[in-house]
Image (tube, rainbow, N blue to C red; front, side):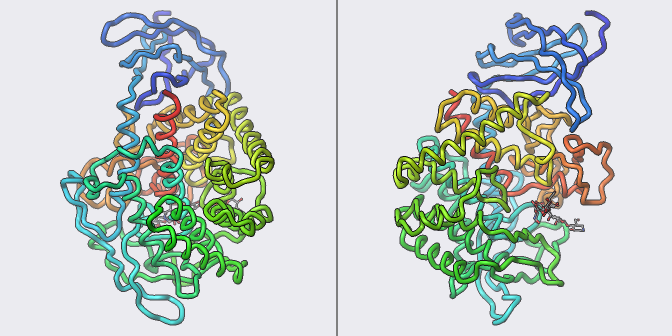
Length: 534
Ligand code: G3I
Ligand code: 9MR
């Protein structure tokens, strides 16, 4: 093979777990033989041939798969093709574990209303911003209210209920599904020395804020925001007046679902959370069609959504699982549609996750549980098929390459991890770890899409703190939105296909911003991997 053309590889750049399926993408138009050596000993541990190549139109690339799954010993390896092409990969529980902790620590870095102390934030320490003690109601009555704490949504400094809700739920889902994993786990946040798991402390920071967004009539304000996006300055310098805006059906139902879930996660505060959930639910019943739209002078994220069946199904399901009250089950049945991959505007899948959880199973009639499980696994089967037929072995189709495609990938992964927990079918496990590999480098732009992790990871994210802090490295542990070719900003992109249109530049808020709702299913997926694949 000497003198052959060099080939490129796309591999998970962070690390595989010992027992997981390990596929490395090789860019080649014909099947090639490969060799894997252990870099420490120099010994050859595997020789093989790639699959026959396939063309992926979403990336305009022809690639084959080198399957190195049979290697399970922790270590650093070199995969080579011919004499002049190689890549390295690592098998390490510790690396995956460190990534998990960084992905959840990202929430601490995005806390509103708190100074980040060097003891916890290291070089990314900063002053507090956005105490939100005097927020004005944009509508009548124009009173001032206190709405402190919470997480910044993203690279901007606003706080949006709909998006906060799915993020908070997903992290609570991780806690409910993997309690043993989280009970002792700590990642050096200010609350790490108390008796509560760090995950519950982190989530509380946001639940406390969400509770303040409920009006006296039970309805929930859609968001807390400045009129325009802040410039790229640190939180303490972003001092424009903040407002709460109109109440809406989506925000109220989303809030009801989250608070009903919180009532199960925090037993000592059960009655408080449940009462808040029921009041928001009641408001939504009386105001079932109030879609939020930005007023003309409000230019920040809209998170607009005018179809509410999924939010009704989700809220009713959570209220049912928490209370066991049949009225809520009837409502859940009324609104429950087909399963889908969750996202901020589509929460139907979240209803399924809760109804099919251990607590849901205990509350549901057995026959009904089986029906829902069958539907859910059918949906997961379709994701498996997509992945198996995909040249990159990743369950991503053209429809998935929207703003936040990496979030879509991780929400697919969460669905599949849940399917695996219900059935033990290894195809689900392979498909979900294949998606994690995708965001960590097994993709056609060859980026590990999580800041601070992997050989090539985003450095110029659309994250105001990271842009303004004068520190070369961005805040670590954040998953960027990822490739999609809407190109809704004014960046110059060198590629225009759905899976290759990505730019590591501040200007690219449509591919290189970070959000709490994309990180949450990453956290879930990594906890699932560390719990389920070993
Ligand atoms: O509603 C249409 C739908 O009818 C159509 O089928 C579909 C096809 O692509 O597009 C739908 O609209 C999309 C909309 O999200 C709803 O899904 C838009 O194309 C898409 O541009 C829009 O992207 C959202 C973006 O804000 C712009 O509004 C992202 O999902 C959302 O994650 C993002 O969120 C922002 C916040 O506003 C502000 N904070 C940062 C955050 C992340 O960038
Ligand atoms: O910086 C904003 C980012 O956080 C949002 O996600 C994005 C989409 O709503 O909008 C960004 O703000 C841009 C604004 O919409 C248009 N002018 C340029 C702003 C970015 O510098």
